[in-house]
Every structure is written in structure tokens, then in C-alpha cells.
Image (cartoon, rainbow, N blue to C red; front, side, top):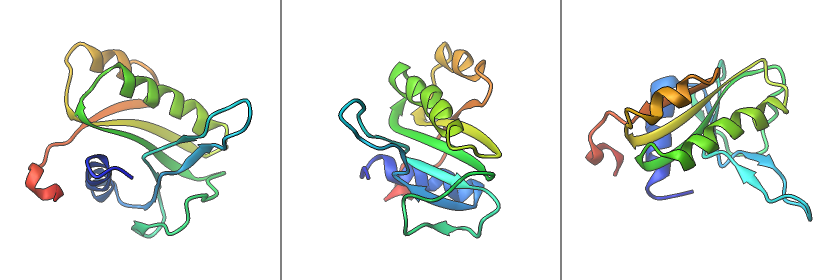
Length: 132
């Protein structure tokens, strides 16, 4: 968990509701693959709260995958958003949205990411003091 990103992830989750799984594992590390994690995964339709377990079964559930950066939208975050969408699909959810959550927008990059079905950009709109 990041002291800069976790507060943004939790801010977004509070807007959406559902069960938040922080640092959700998408890929287990192996000799041929590095481990991959989401900053957050929201399971919609569950009681609002933060899960105490990270490896939560999502097959047949509606979910929101979150990748967070406490900076302006950029290509690194955009790539995380796109590939997270594809990795979550491998876990057979009923539906998935992939969110690039950031602290600043980019008028050129945002439309490119949002042209990909299932991807969206959310820009933190609160006051930074709310996050402390």
C-alpha cells in the first residue's frame, strides 16, 4: 500500500460503495512471470467495507478494477488500466470496469484511454486535506 495512492483509492471506493480489496493479486509470481496487483478491486453488490483477505473470489461478480497514481494521467497508468482489465477478465467476473484513478487530468491522453471499452479515467476531485 502506498501512503499517496491508498487515500485516493479509498476516496474513490467511498463514492462507489461495495467491498474493497486492497492490493488484489492478479498474477501470482513464478519463474516466468512477475506478480501483478491492483491498487484496489471493488466487488459491487457486497456490503460496503474493506476486505481483510486479498485473494477474494470474483467469478460471476460485478467488479471495478482500480489502478491509482497520485499524479497526472500518463501512459504508465493508462497501460496499467488496459492490462488490468484483461487480467481481471481471466478471473471470469460477470462484468468489469477498469479505472485509472489519478490526481490530474490530461486532455490528450484521456480520450485515448476512454476509447477502449471498459476503461475510464477518474480524477480526484476532493480537497487534498480530505486524504490525510
